[in-house]
Amino acid sequence: MRIGRSPSGNPSAGLSPRAAIVLGAAVLAVPPAVGSLVFADLHASSARTVGVIRERLDPAATAARHLGTLVNGQAASQRGYLLTGDPRYLAELNAGTADAAETFAELNGRATSVPGLHLDLARLEHELATWLSGLDPAGAPAAYAGPDRVSAAAVHASDPHRLLATTGHMTERLIEEQQSLQSATSSEHRSMLLVVTLLTAVLLTAVALLFVLGSRRFVTPLTALERRVQEAARGDAGGGSHAHAGWFGGVFAEVEQVHTRMKELRWDARRHREALVQHGEAALGVFEFLVSHTGPGPGVDAAGHLVAAEGLVAGDFWDILPLPGGATGLVQGDVSGHGVQAGLLGAAAKARASSALRLGHGPRVAVESAWGAVAAEDERFVTLAVVVVDPAAGTVEWVNAGHEPPVLRRADGTVEHLGSTGPLVGAVVDPADRPWHSARTPLGAGDLLVLATDGLTEARSPRGEEFGADRVARVLREPAAGDPASAITGLYLAVDRHGIDWQRDDVTVLAARLTP
Image (cartoon, rainbow, N blue to C red; front, side):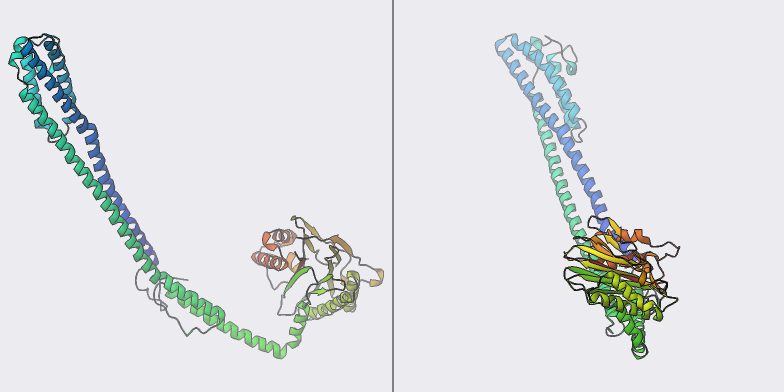
């Protein structure tokens, strides 16, 4: 089946399904990818700006303020010495000049890499060097660290006012730079929020467009296709042809062909049914008798099913009937061969066995009665299993006359087989010798009894592998096989998956359990 071509065989209009999927994936993938790159770039830039503020400008501003404090202190010490002549002020000047040099080195190390501050740093360095040179005429001012270097003459000659002004200006420039970078960071944050908002809007729009496109290209055609398939399954005409050009045009064409074929099959089936009614009423009646049953007695749930190998009439038969005293009788037989002659013999054997049970006789008498139907048959025989389920006593009594052993799956999952209790039913066996005897076993809540003909257990796959009793037991252990109808369905599905040839032999399954 090809999708993407119109019923006429020409390429369908629009994109192919694969191209549409690629386009949809691109629509959903490209905006997040682009948005992620932009967001990552903005985030990295914001992180760098914040790093400059935290690692450079904040420490530099702190150092500039500290330097201003030191210079102010030095100016006060200088004035104190000029006014009092106290030599302690000279000691304070010696200690403060070393701190000022170290503080400027910290400031210069933090702010030298910030663009726009080079001139201010150079001016501050020059003023600081000039002031220190005035305090220490004999030494290098930037490296000043020696004690007792400030002389009385230097105190009178040095003027700190230009240095104080330059230090204040430097502090202001650092604060301005901080504010500028903080403003840039806020702008970057707003840009990131805008990117996220736009990306969300784009994605929502893309999802909405893809939803609309998917509804038009997929949901609507699939809904129409589902409706057409339902019409075909019901056998409705459906208002004529439903041509659909587009991606699903080929599918609609296939459905139209299936619909037409199903109508033809229904017409053929109706004609065959009419022919069967007109010319095969006897065969239809035999089949209906082979599978007819009254139903179980009280306290028992039972079901059965037969699939004939040829046409309707089979050599298998089964019955479920209520017995006197509240028990339930189960009858299953398999006549050698299949077809009309085997079906007629099976109908006679079933009638005799079921009648004996209805009269209140046990399973052994029922088998002996069935022998009367085949006594005159030299080339045919019947395998027969007759079971009486007594819910009041909680027992199963059975006679297995050469039949496939019935399976009793206990509630705990163990499996037992109700073995043979006598030979098959045929002309070579004489009932006067009492060849058949009955056996009895308990039947409790949750136990499941299954009778099957050898058409099930001996069914072979195309490789020649038998379905076998082990697979039957495996199916019956599954939780889905809890009730008779479900167990029968499970066995038929399992044997079909096994790949058997359904025309090789009749397949009949009968199951029962006590009502929960």
